[in-house]
Image (cartoon, rainbow, N blue to C red):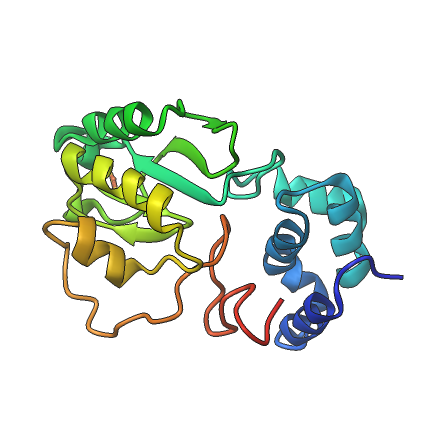
Length: 207
Ligand code: FES
């Protein structure tokens, strides 16, 4: 019997139905498990195992490989600063330090109020728009240390329910690698990726 909300169970069924074999749904279901409890618990992995018909050990083998599956509670907003080579050469370390200093949250930690988590990450595939930052995996390119401080203050004061890459790019970004052409209106509502085209977790009508 599932411990998940009815909405999350519906979402799980929808995701599983998209794959010829239900075990292929293990990764998106792990994000559902995170969304249910705020981080990935042993119980969450057991639940995923039951849904997709593999063992909890097999689920854990997948979950432990990827840094985006968080085993500790993450803040409402996860700020990920890229410090790999392209971003590092264009000031990515300074951006990270500005985020840490302005938020009072060091890399790898979550603030006591649970609002912000800060991490440095390896290349997030936006090298042409370096230095790149993500908030809840929504991308901002061409970020300066001053803009990074503005971003931290904005998250603290506005506390948007949804963070959206295009909005944050306009407010806090600089040079972009290229114009993505299609505006993304969905955004993310928590420290896990929005699953398009399935919609944003937590948005109206979803988990
Ligand atoms: S090196 Fe930062 S996005 Fe690739």
